[in-house]
Amino acid sequence: MFNETRLLDNVMATHSNRPISPHLQAYKLPLTGIISISHRITGVLLSAGLVVIVYMILAVAGGAYTYAAMQGFMNGWLVKLLYWGFIYALFFHLCHGVRHLIWDAGRSFDRETLNRYALIELTLSVALTLAALL
Figure (cartoon, rainbow, N blue to C red):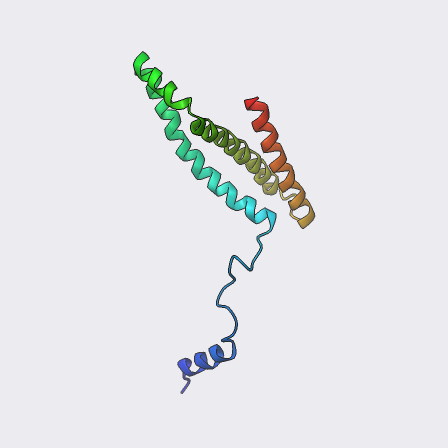
């Protein structure tokens, strides 16, 4: 009769000095991995930013008093910094979406091209943000 528990104990004993899974401190993500995670995070942040846009629209529709209150809130330095971040996230998400369209066409899957397009994507998203806000 085959004893699975005994076999598993033997296998674990021979590999007991190895880590169970790679730790983030020991594993360095490639640039494309970091950008992929960033793309997901910016998507969530853009969704959250839509709540602020709805607040702004409701303030405009609410009349002069609510509009003035919204303007006072939006003139803070922290809100302006978040606004810049929202605009950057929008352009970053756009640039990464174009990159996915290129991938859907079956192009640029070699490592060198992936890294080059990642740098182009980052540079273009910063340039578009600066062009939109300055």
